[in-house]
Length: 254
Image (cartoon, rainbow, N blue to C red; front, side, top):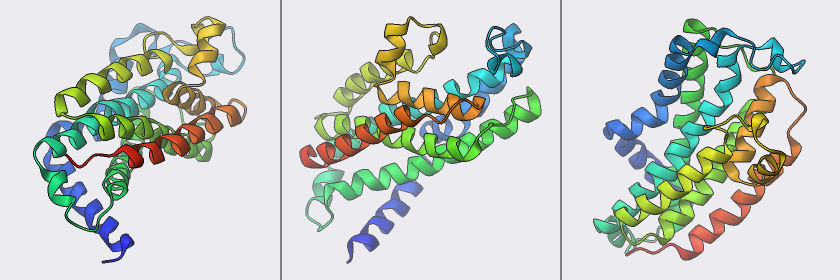
């Protein structure tokens, strides 16, 4: 069996397993749309200018300004919470040990999971925008092609970190613990607790060197119509280029 054929079959199998797991499918597909819509309906700042002191941000409402952060939150939830636990669960149940007797290299398992979740998160982003625009007035992204590029790199870099955790964690419990630690740290740097523009300059600089911080910055720049986020995209590309080979190198079947 060729490597391409093996990857295709693995991706199909992982897609079927993904659909059969309601909680994982919800957080990957529906969570961003539901969260952004609920925030738009209940938060008093949703219809106000996102930042009335900024010439660009004063032209968008609060819920539009928060859309990139919700998207980054969705990526972090899948990449650092669901994904490592799934792979470690395969290891604990002996699924990976059985696969080790086949010619399939560990990198194919990680890539198949990445492809399935990347596809799900792209669909989630579309659902989030359509529902948000229809129900709570979320504005259209100013630079949609840049947004797609930023989303893909955000997913790749976040999953690179999740893949390292998945490769090293001996049990599902360990993967959950390690993943959730990285998850909550990433939420801070992604601006979930406090918008990045309101953070001290030193924290903003530090956040820009993390996968989710750089991802949030790039998604925001594309959605809000700010200058092309070259630095943020390069940071995420670097995390991907380092994290994926490291995960494949240290991946353990059992």
